[in-house]
Amino acid sequence: MKTNPTQPTRRVELGKHIVADPEICHGQPTFKGTRVMVWIVLEQVARGMDWDEIVKEWRGRVPRQAVAEAVRLASEAFKGEGTHQLRVNSRRKLSREPGLAVA
Image: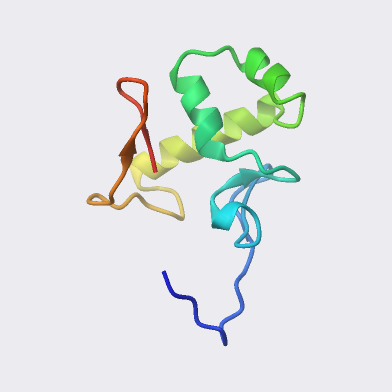
């Protein structure tokens, strides 16, 4: 993807805990103040990992409220209510785990 050098890239606040910043992880949504990508935590939730275990694994940098916000935003995206709707024909790599895919 080419960027226009005259257009400034902007940080987008997706919620209280989640941000997409072109300067961090190539603009992938991350939890504020971290480089923890939201899709990784969502995969942990999808695998059935307990939210408290997720918080512990990320050493408290991703609190329960942030996990809940990620799940809510993902749900809104599927309902078409979020600010960033899913692209139906986007290319995706399959995750190593059955039933999961990564963007």
